[in-house]
Length: 266
Image 1 (cartoon, rainbow, N blue to C red):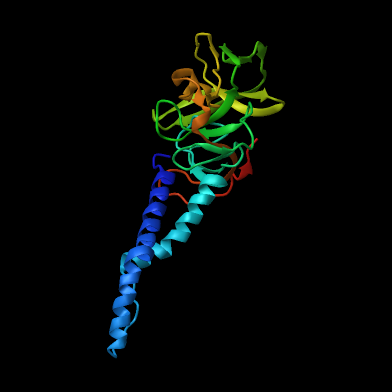
Image 2 (image 1 turned 120 degrees about the horizontal axis):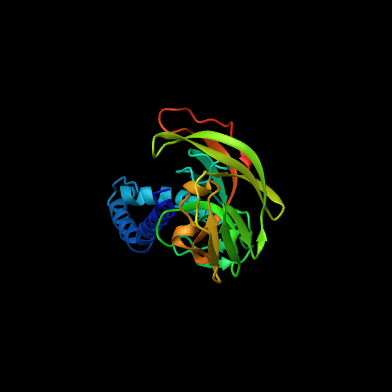
């Protein structure tokens, strides 16, 4: 998620549109006048557009369609880390619904149409306050919520979430090139259960109050996730969209893509 594709696509559309408009308003008239003069002299001529103009006219509608599709409807992303394990694996390609939380202008992020708001338990793509890249985490706290994290359990507005122990799992951690053992639990938010992982280490109890216009975000791989516990809540103005499905998976390196993990996300 390091490449800001919407930024470059938007600029490509603007540049192609500017070249096309410049040709229509200024260049094409002079070109046609020269062709008319040559035709009057009995020469056989063809109105051949300059290569940049021809390319701009060809690319503009295609790029505009892609920008509108990615900005207002849906966009694919690839999961770059293990912070959402076991829900999302590194290498998963997910589909993000850009319409779920309202229509926003590309690059600026200004909301132009209200459609819905993030709900607790949603898996959301957003830009965090400390990094220009896209992050994906689960919405834990809404504006005004009081969040407590005690003994690896979450309390929202004084109520402890429901947890069920599943068992221990052994996984490989790519960043440290080592195996680790995690405990898997199901966690229930708003009546919907999802799996989480915890390490067997101690952690100091902490508490936060989510300010207005912000959301408290956490990864499902609780002890291997860089999230709101470190850099604070995510701003509503920097929401990208809601993750709704896994549509492809590709392991790092020379591996073929697979569709074994395809499913809708709760």
